[in-house]
Image 1 (cartoon, helix red, strand yellow):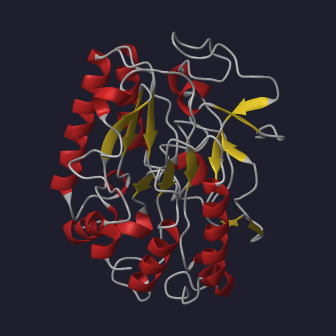
Image 2 (spheres, helix red, strand yellow):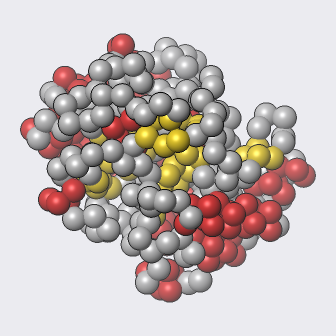
Image 3 (cartoon, one colour):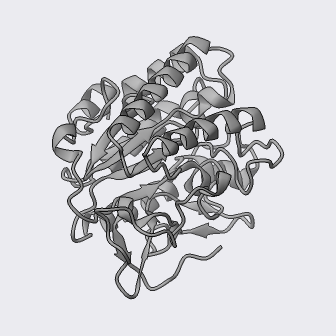
Length: 335
């Protein structure tokens, strides 16, 4: 599928928002809802992983196609339908400028085109999408193929912020783009504060940190100085009246689905599942259910190299349920 053909299939983010939702109508809380979160479909990863050639070994991705098709089929059968389906980065494995990128993109677009038209796609950029060191050219390619690399939208009274975390990893080749996102985020958080937004969710590929804000710098987190700057920015927004659980990068992206709890403990932020629900949200989830985000698409490669289907009813991240709704599952989230 060409980029031109994809325009008619995906409601891509444009103008820093997602027009699948009318913002004024969606700013009002109307009750619990849920969405599907996944990450790293990364067509080509499994062959590259198995051969040990991460840079150029991803010349086959039939298994990823089959797994993602199964995930899409499972999502389409959900009743009631999820509000949207978000993929938190690394949509394909081939880095910008490397072989197989065009072919992997076409196959993923073909599979995602089968998602129910009433379930909008929310697409987040990862390092394999814009490069470990993004440039204006790689960002423009992502925008042309998948839509804006950062944007916001409202659903059911919840503000969702999609960020390009590569700008915080290494913006040496595109400092102006990083500055533009930083300024835009400040504006979004200011709006959230003025509106006394009770629920906001951030999606990004690279987590701020994995276990602790003071942990050592690692390939799988942002540097300590950056993470504290961003975390402080978010906590200041909390102080102004908006709740901002950070969801996405830490649990379902960049670590190739090594499952961990969500990051919500910085400065003892009051966003744990035991927190009293804010006004307008359910006080408690129904018996036998857990607040969760489902990891629906893509294969998973654990530390042992085993593959896990993501069409299982396994929550990989749980947070304040008001943003995600309550989804029945037979398995409680584990550490």
